Length: 102
Image (cartoon, rainbow, N blue to C red; front, side, top):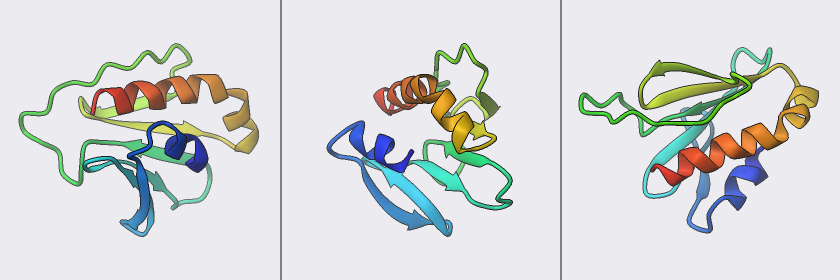
């Protein structure tokens, strides 16, 4: 999934932030959650803190892969590498939509 994210846009870079791989364009927008290591989790966000004037992101998610703790944050959770491959098209669509709204 790291390579998928990096391929979305030539301005996306990767670095370690919050002790995990994190991705940014102008600012950080996606960070892997590594603990507990029971699943693959990617936090989609608009930075380190929740903004009081955050605009809602709109993402087509027909498989229900995202959970939304806030209007500008979503958690993508997949049970395994096999699950990631099974949902590859949906994951790519979600990532493309998120980056387009940054």
